[in-house]
Length: 359
Image (cartoon, helix red, strand yellow):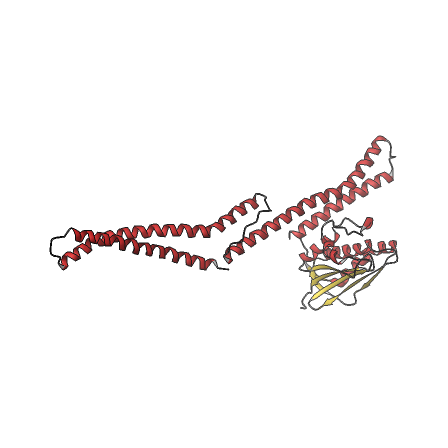
């Protein structure tokens, strides 16, 4: 594949060559004709050297003038042809970018033979694809949020209509139902706000030196009553400190989401273990369960917003807990990853954060 630099050099040489060739051809032809005519006017007279010189001197300006004019015209034609060959791909890039800016994310730029222009076309095409995917995610997010809000709003609206019509008796049960659904909507709004700010890197973090092992113990203690109520055993293995520099509240939120996910996918009699330790230059906390497990092709999809696996059923939550956990971890320069031996064989989620350097 040729380079743009080589094409530009070749185009300049081609324009110059066209001008020189036209100058020589036309200049020689016109000069010869003019010289012969000048000599013809001197017939009958003895030709002397000075007469031949005068004839040549008279013919030379005419030859150079016509040759220069022809050279300029030939160079202009060659330059126009070459510029169209080079500017054509740039014009296609310009038209494509305008179409993409107008919302036509399916527009693509054909690859030019020049390496540099081909790279620009690839970048524009990749940008269009990413923008198209972002638009699809935005539309899907709106639909998913509307779906998530539909159930609590329906419950609240139905309960209030029943109260107004006298079909439902006013009392603590009805009020608790409305309050629970309103709380669900509030948590959904808070989760979406946290997720949006974390993914856009606008989330305010209170970064301080802390211990990931202690945070893992605190998160387990917060959810231990829920584990006991469900009949799921919860164990913590954090024998040594795992110092990190992070926002303790946000890291506890990550661990609580991971533990809540493990509890949601564990049956009665199941077992969940939280381990925290240093691993080289990283501090690692792993939540391992003996629950439903994850298929290999779903290990990354579980981090998508509102994604629920085929076997999730009614026990699945809102579907953004893992998304929030990964976003918060990445906001700290870390990550959350998933691993599983397959469906029905449990799963483990690992939070990795940069370990704090010793003083």
